[in-house]
Image (tube, rainbow, N blue to C red):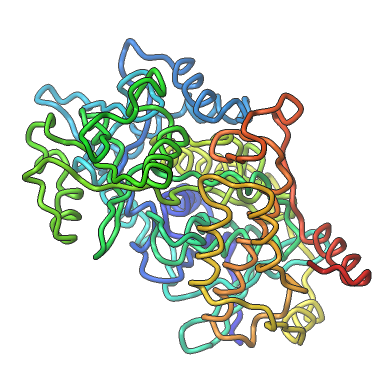
Length: 527
């Protein structure tokens, strides 16, 4: 096993990881680790833009209120205020770094409007290719300033006594490398891939969240999974139809051509995503009807949305009729590793940024185009926190600690499910609409006797399945605990938001869960 040392280790190559690397590279020795190609991330795929208060008639207070309303006031107020106040600074920095944001003939930013926003404040690049343009610019910035290791699957954190010392990684050949660092930043994305219909890149299995969980870090809000209303519905393939299409005048219609959002919400087709997704879900599953995105009223569609046009062409769907078949799919996860304003987790030396983190800014349902913004804002916060430390922390690290973690021999896969089975369970029992009966069935099917086994001798494919099942179990059991409906978490048996659940977070940790599982096993009531 090789041991590689760095002052800062960043796991993940999306917007959060790369912006953290950009700021840290000025003062620190930085290594960025990705499980595949550096461009293989949800950030790269992001069609939507970055929300920012730029228009002279807009204010951060309005952006703040839109964010809170979309999040059903489950948001962390202080964190959310920092998020929206930094929007214009993020756009300025990215522009200086070479991101070609869309501008009009006068050189001003072209501001779009998306679901949940009451003003035009979405900045795009390349029409519907914002993520691609941002990531390409960031890669150019950091490529010669930090060490980038691709094809390294992060397996487990090296942690003991509440301190994180680094991470074990495996490559496709099974070789193990320990990356040892004083500061370890998890930027590995979310867990929407535990569902079959998802807009996410392959591999969004919550591996970063699961690593933190196994190491003892606290998690929060795992029950809140956002379903994007408009994934392309096709037998050949599926992909995301950006919300900006509705911002330009696209209308959701039923099979008979009638608008389905009339009377459901004042913002109609641009209502928050949880509301639109549930309405489409009802139309498809209760009315047994198809739903289409009517784009007939959008001029120059192909020019404005080249990515969506290509997506439809590849799926064999003609745009001549002006109707795109759509259905909801898992898109973004509000829950994750609990952090403070500076990305710090409950473990010393461990930070989390981007979708794998739970900063609290999204509440129970993320506002459109606040995701890239969050990754940028809190990556900078975290980097500046690390740089500002007057005395570099040194954690005692012994060979015995390394041997203890590396040579652990406990592994149990007696109940490990196949990927398709896990996704089917989540689709059926923990999707857009949930209830206690279904969630309990899912919990029983997903239950393992041990969620913290030794993994280093196991093949990557098996580790991925364990991560996915762990993440699915954590999500389902968190859904069971929240006995109300709030934002993206909708329970048929508790269809209303309840006052006693306001601002109440469900905190998860492996120590607490293992204790409960052990007690149940001893009593013979594991499931």
